Length: 109
Image (cartoon, rainbow, N blue to C red; front, top):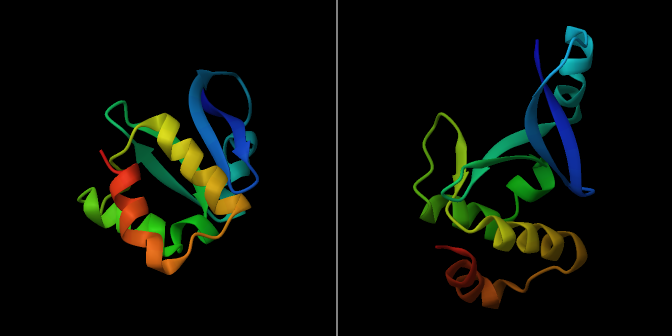
């Protein structure tokens, strides 16, 4: 049976990776109750689960818009390492609105 293993990047984000397990469906859905959104990052399309605070942030929204997000799923076109730095920054420092354009250019591929 296929399930997900979650690794923590920070308190607002988890990295989801596939692994095979015989765990119950209840275990497989345990992360879905935490108001997390699936985000695919970079050319490798690494899967992250981020909370609504991240998804609603203006910088994150601009990156998604610039990445050409589809209605099917959220994608961010930047390197995985830069995305993890972005998540750290959103948790530890509140970027100023006047630097939004510069930050979008920095984080986008």
